[in-house]
Length: 259
Image (tube, rainbow, N blue to C red; front, side):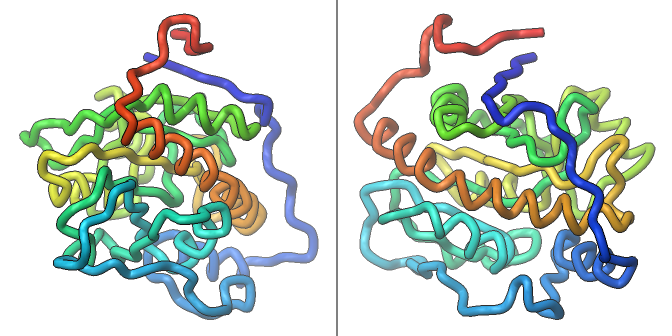
């Protein structure tokens, strides 16, 4: 199992001051994909590009986000890469273009592995779907992780599992025992849509073992995760350029280490 660490470190989230259960409920609704626009934190126009299926062929990757807030965050660091909002459980995956270099799913996720802390970034090396389906290998995950580390983020690499709901408790332990390191609700659907195209998935951890979603502290964790997500764009674009050029995975001297 591969772990990669950047300079961001293992600092835990700050305890929120002056924030109560009501704000935690607002963030809970957003993170669980209800995407309720009930707080000024997430107000404003959506800054994502809708390329649309059947549109012109795209040379580089396309970034996919489930929620508008995720799209707004990642778009801040992107100069030329389009972002498509695919919705809760990727129900709007038909908005994705038919031709592009790769599809990259980004957003928030829940940790299954206790070694992942809020604010950490997980780069998937494979995407797992429903039981009985074949995992989809991701393209150049270590290369993508190294690019994120260059920007000062705390990054780990491992499998992501896509489920139809937020994973908690015993189910979290079950998936962790299968080797999955984080859970989301869109990556497998996007990978299916990609067909033979390269895919990648990047998730910023909001909750996990010891850091429950239903807790006032999730407000601070969520806002911190959004700031981390906003820093991923430049690395995604550099990775996309290298992918289009046919760059290989980094060698053993790239900084990766296995616990």
